[in-house]
Structures are given as structure tokens and as C-alpha cells.
Image (cartoon, rainbow, N blue to C red; front, top):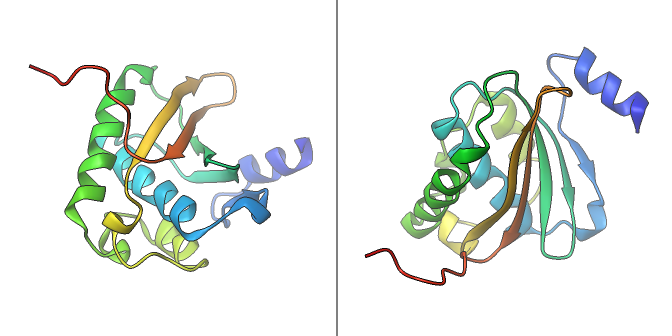
Length: 149
């Protein structure tokens, strides 16, 4: 894995590394890019999407980042991703850069963001040492204990 990480860090333009391909499906794949669009809006200084590792319920993404700790933006990102899901916009109409659009389209897509059904952000942290954002997510809208007043 270390060689892969070095390769990712040394290369400006390359495709996203995909881990556990067998667990990838349309919804998890599309959820990653809905989150990516939300992160780009909330944390404009976020860099390239480096990797997505899929698991049974969602995935874990790493994104290039060398700014201030923005872990507190987790709820904003989750809310924005939820809004994108509820708007039911075409997946290829998301606000993504050319590289992200290319890697998103490399796998079959749900028709619209509402087909994903929702995304819960389990973890959103900045790793200063690795200069990365770490994002862990699961499919499905967040379970809220109390609705905001």
C-alpha cells in the first residue's frame, strides 16, 4: 500500500484508486461523488480525490488537503449531500471537476442523486501529516435523534 500512496502523492493527474472493488455498487459509487460535490462546496480548498475503498455499507474516501482542520464541517457536508440527494438531479449535473467527472463515469451510475436515497457521514477528519481528508460514509439518510427546533 505504501508504494501506491507514494504513487498517488507523486502524480498530479491520475485516476482514483479503488479498494475492494467487489463491494462497489451504483449507489455506493454515486454516493461517493455526491459527497465529493458537497465537500468541494463546503471546503473549497479540498484537492484531488485520491481513493475510495468500498465496504458492506458504504465507503472510505481520501482527498488531497493541506488546509486548516475542517473536521467541524462534517454536519454541513452531510446536510449538503442530503440536499443533493433530495433534489434528484442528474448525476452528471453535479458540480465536479473534469477528473472527478471522468472517474465517476467510469462505473455505472444511478440516474439521479435521489436514487441513492441519502448519505450518512460517519467520519470526516483532516490528517495533517498525510495532507489528506478522510471521509467515511454509509448509504441512507442520517438517523437524527431530535429534529432541530
